[in-house]
Image (cartoon, rainbow, N blue to C red; front, top):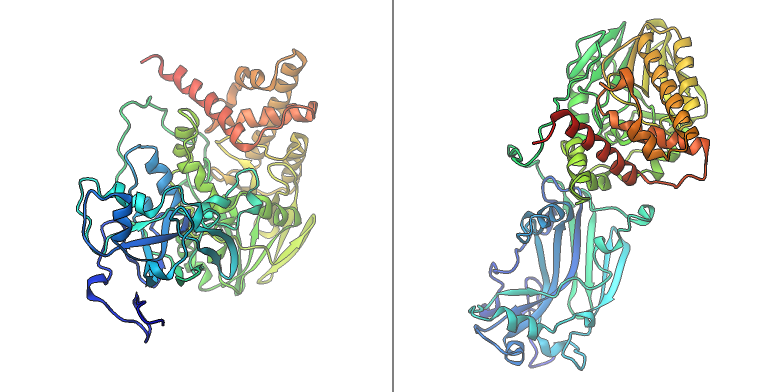
Length: 565
């Protein structure tokens, strides 16, 4: 190290410690342990590569030139961010809170200004690089700062006594944070938010490198929700359909060696799963929407799986409320799905991005609608587990000496829709080809395929039918779903013949006996799909646009139900 230049840091034999410049707990950021922790309840955990200036001598009301003389040195600064919490808090317009209060990293060196290059405007001139698990996220240069550190510190010193050890961040070096690489128009290009075990490496010329491993943390202590006094009262959500077994959360035996795990009320995300046991082996039908729900289910099925260990898991389709819990299955479990399901799992919105439904401000109608339906789920830490085996249309499995038949009857609800039939028990797991007491949604279609799938399910002769959503039913439940789609086709075709556009058709439709089903606004998506079948040149709408129309349909219905305030 050249004489006259001293580098201060936290480790290394060549350090010359100066007690005046040891980094105390600063006012402007927090130090973090070497192994970082993701902020509890955050599904969008990311980082920002910044450069930090550390104050060496006290001062206040400084000019930019004076402020530069108060800088002891520069160091790398990782600003860890919970972007989903930040997005929520930002809507309150009261500044940052827990979204920026998880952790910060400083180090590994504190380098004096005379060792570093600056451009003619007084900005640091350093090349920086950010990686996750050895994969490049972005590179950049520090000259892109809008303000010099002298200007930043001068502003902060107005009326404030700066103290040795105070730390000021540069803001993100462009290209070196995850948020910059998130494009909702090209979700497949996004590498994903940080998860347990990810290693983040940040480097800067002349300042060294910091490497930290992200670790999951314990769930937060829940806080009771506060009612919104300005909100319109809503109808209570009660599934109106009768049930062949008590419609309560948990494990219910529905046949010899066959159980259903039920999640009332059957609305968005509240899906059912199943368990089939043979001699010394068992098969799981679907997982649940998040890891806590799936963990609870796997624990609740242990009285069966301890005696008949899980050997197989079947995914009936690609939607997250049936696939997100797959990572909790033992590695020895063979996951099976239709080829179309495996394909669609790679093209669906990534699990953690589903948190957008909870945190994005999408306007006064869509925002409360989505939060009411998706706000109770925890989308953090989910890693999709891909199927180990796929099939096309049919597959017969031996589960401990029992025959279990898998039949792909899609596309209908999704690109592929598998039902699971246990002939010797007379039980059928229908996946999301059946919604009982709640409204089915046609994401893929055509509607004629769904009607044909209902006929195929009826033809299996099962006496007990477990839907993807809603209470356990029988062949009457299958016929009710078939009749619903027949009604939608009839109403949509008549509206089209009258020259109505799809929104006029959806908002004016007569739902007749189906009006009392939960989430009846799903009719908007179903009429849209039927219109696309009649006339493929209809404008293409993504799911956010469809959810927007569904939210407006629901708002009008709720307003009509409660009347003017």
